[in-house]
Length: 264
Image 1 (spheres, rainbow, N blue to C red):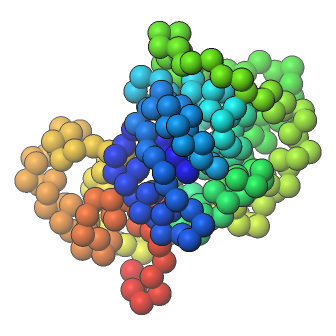
Image 2: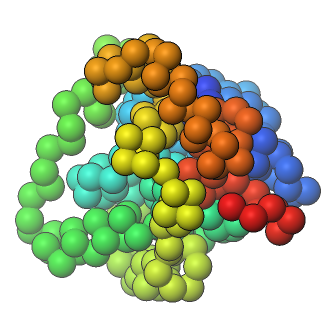
């Protein structure tokens, strides 16, 4: 598997989580779409985990080049319906939004993607259903500025790729997965963050940590000192039973391996 995400903490967390499974191995990481293509071309993995918003060549721009090499599972914070639809139109084998799946569900989605079965978290499923209800005659809205345009300035090498899945063709095939609210056979629960009893400020800081911000960036965003940020982080780590940023993010996003011996 190749993991493509511009956030090194997210990459590290996914690497630890997925490499701990006997049948899954992360063979390479990538920080943008171009690296994802190069690593995928080199290693020919069974699955590529692909973020949307990355510097240089973004995930949407790289996607049509990647699907000719390996099945692609989108794993991202981007939940806009236009992006979800475009990713599926370009051949993505599934779409997961951070914070809407557990570690076991992610592992199952990876295995399903390898076997050609689509998975969607609740937000992505809702976006797909909304697009289907609008009908094919309804024009798709524009992608957010900067997405899907990087290839004009920095084209990837040409590589033969299979035809992207057509929306009309995938309707009957994807409907069962959407009905499962992908991944679990029922509504996919969001992580139970209330169990950690974070204050509103700590929730804000934790969300910024998960987005990849440094202490300095968090301080500037929240208009507080770096010392105060560190104090918040220390309290957050205690409440999340974590000793590092990557571990805290995994707990916060619901991707941490389950540990029956530990009570949150």
